[in-house]
Image (cartoon, rainbow, N blue to C red):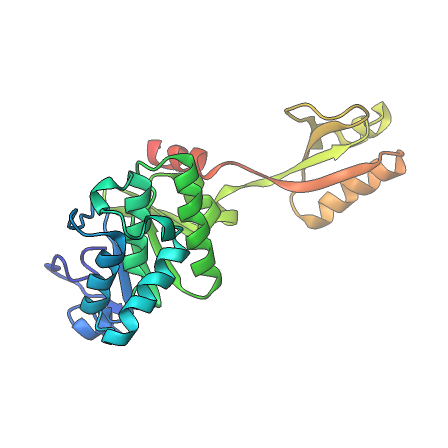
Length: 258
């Protein structure tokens, strides 16, 4: 992240942002940045802080106040707008940091541990803002060890180990267990269980009365549907079928521990 933003300089190789070399300051005009351990002058209020960043972002004088008010509302800090930053909690500081990163209406937001040290309510508020930005078309480049948050926000994930890229792909690609499906259905008769053999296994967890949880093994969609036809022919009523997924955290631990 620091290389891309020009904070440190590469000893070799190159990169571009929006088709411009990273050494070109114009490449960063459409980028917002929230560092992991940011600091604001604690004698300023939240509103004054954002007005300062609006000025540094090059906003016209008559636009700075309106943009500050807009962003304070977006990160749920309107009621604390005129309090000194020194009175803010960690979650409020993170949300104020997110607001300053959005000041120049960036196409790319670079965020380093945006929810680090924040309580569950604060994490949810930050996540809601990030999802809104993502859905509006901004690109979020997010670094975090809170993998449950990554799973909710990101569409693509990359895992680094000792400075090397070891896995990357969509969240679905990385967390879907190959060839295993979770099935919720009425109890499977012995005849159907025998016919399916090792392809049908008991699942984990409890279900309401009258339903059971199973695992179906199938090499592809066609085989899955053949298994389902066997169950339906045996009178089994199917509640749901979905690919079995592991959590991103479990996948991460498995990858980096190998």
